[in-house]
Image (cartoon, rainbow, N blue to C red; front, side, top):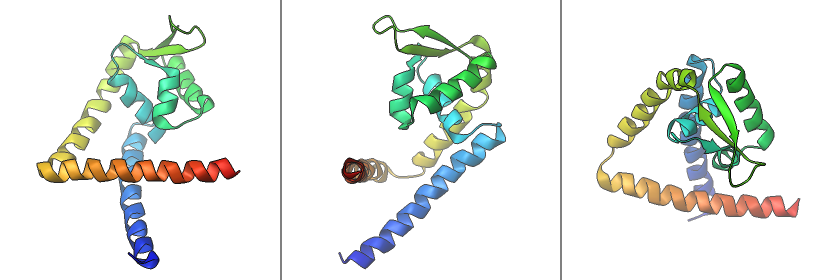
Length: 152
């Protein structure tokens, strides 16, 4: 494929990605959250035994400072607690309090259902193809951006 045609497809893909992110941003704002805060709630919701703060950073490709600020906000609101990890005292396990669980219950299950319902609109083969191609593309993106970062 010619480079100009690849650019055209890349631009179309970027618009689609932006449309997905905008859906999360808009939903988050409806709940006085940022998208990153929404994603932290989502990770914790699907980790009933809690989640390491470092795992949240890794999953969201976010700095420790960013995730710490989000967790600090949720701590002040009484939505989460932090405990030392038994295997590494420097790392903290974050989990919902009862109030946090009740709070997130109003936000995360409807969002998760919207995601599943949207994907369920596709046929089985399209779902598998979407995940397969997105996995490939994400790996290539990481590889190329890692190479750029290594040059700096």
